Image (cartoon, rainbow, N blue to C red; front, side):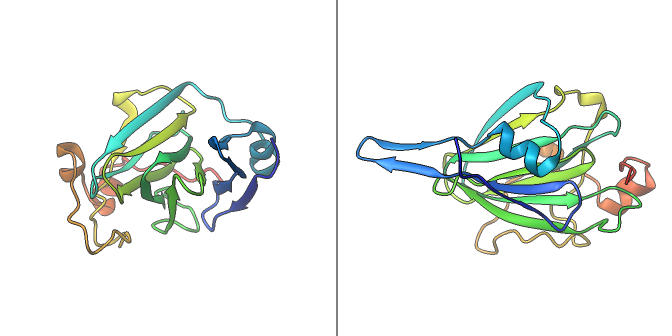
Length: 192
């Protein structure tokens, strides 16, 4: 496979990848994750301990999720069906970009993917019904060390579409604000 474009985002530890698509009369072929391109951009391969797959209705917001560092959980996320507004949030206390975010549309036309390293928060909003998001995760699910902050926290000002009413899980709806999570000592530290 060739033809993967990568770009570092403004938040250290986050990248966007866009693979080439191959369309013909049979349909489409694309390789959303390609290790050589990933290593060239990030400097090391991602350890994959678990893959996740979600299907969401239009308006569903999942996140902002993050895990304790160490061990943390890096994620490589793409959208094989539908579209999401994917958001990377810097929740690392002491980071020069703490509290900032970047939003990227991931969809089944571009097969663009986002990688976020340990300590960064992740959320997305499904822009279409039956949207599928797939994630490669560096560590397995570990409920005792996984946390969430409110995706609707006004201090974060995340750019959710204004024409949609966010649909949240009970856990995400009850999540603390970033300030409350910081006060409770839940946020990860920036390791430079």
